Image (cartoon, rainbow, N blue to C red; front, side, top):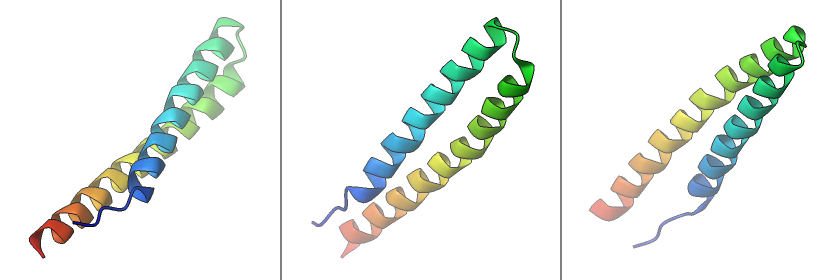
Length: 68
């Protein structure tokens, strides 16, 4: 049973980036830098689907390796 940890590491990295972007967004909102809030909000909206896609891809690869 071979399982690649690259997908898990990528998922952790994407989710960490989501946390960091959300924290920056809240921080910039507090100091009323609304352009930066929109930038970090947009980055958050881009990174989350990447994490979801990575999760789905890792899950299907794990299923395929278990079937063999």
